[in-house]
Amino acid sequence: MEWYYAKDGGQVGPYTDIEFRALLESGEISGDTLVWHEELTDWQLLNSVQPAWFGNAIPVSSSIRPPEVAVDEPVAVCAVSGAVRPQSELLRYGNEWVAPENKDIFLQRLREGVSAKGENPTSGGYTFQDPQGRAKLAKVMMIVFTVTSILTSILDAVSPDSGAEELTAVDWVLAATGLSGFVAFILSVVFFSMWTHRVVSNAYALGGEWMEITPGWAVGWYFVPLANLIRPYQALKQTWQTTFESDEVSPVMPAWWGFWLISNFLSNFSFRLSIRGETEISQVVSLVSSLFELGSLITVIVIVNRLTQEQVSRTKEWE
Image 1 (cartoon, helix red, strand yellow):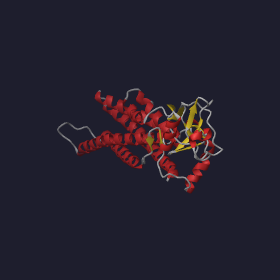
Image 2 (cartoon, rainbow, N blue to C red; image 1 turned 90 degrees about the vertical axis):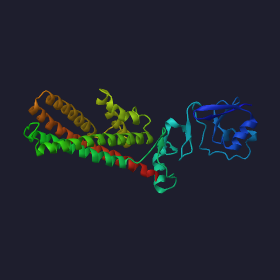
Image 3 (cartoon, helix red, strand yellow; image 1 turned 180 degrees about the vertical axis):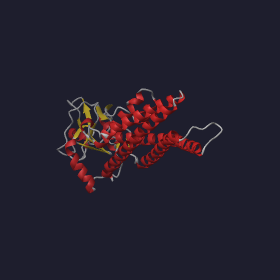
Image 4 (cartoon, rainbow, N blue to C red; image 1 turned 60 degrees about the horizontal axis):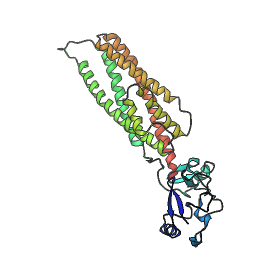
């Protein structure tokens, strides 16, 4: 008789009775392993087959039944009921699998410390990591950049024109704020990108395998012309939906993206006007751009706070 067993969505074998028993004794397979041989009509748990050489193996609970699934579909055991079902029908919490109807019971047990593993949730190769440090750095640098940018626009608008040989105190202040703003801009891009990568990775770890944009591309799309008008927003939108377990997103999400796009458009327009020598119009457009920039700052800080706090609060179930 030739034996096969299911592993990682595929079948392994064939093995003789002696070889198969050796696999059982070595721990490679167990009574809960799906097996098949030519006398079986479907894949079954080894415990339920009970071959003559199986010895004194402990039978599985009567609540466990062979799954009616093809061998190429991965299966798992519900941590609450013990039922074997396709992984596509189960929810993953850390290293545990839970049927949707048993989710509340499982979470209650976690809160009571019955079966908590003390592990961060892991899924699809992603493991949850605390985003709070990156969130703080991103917020600080975005605030510094926005403040210096607005201050530069105001000073540029109210300061009188001066010749190349008569630099005023305002000119020196403008130079200082401009340099500070440039450094803050670079750092805000770096830290916001790091935070974005972290929360998108966490969303995957929290069950976001359905998401279309990977953590790397959630950042990378910002640097791709035209695609950067929509794809970065889609990445954070899907992250929000996964984190909050909802198809809806807060109105603050589209508001932030609208503010950000408009402020960038106006900023570029103001720069082009200044190149053409239309200084006064350029300054007015720059001031208007600063208002949208401020709106973008306020809304993105709300997003960073809420996403970070929600992800951290969800992982407390594993503590």
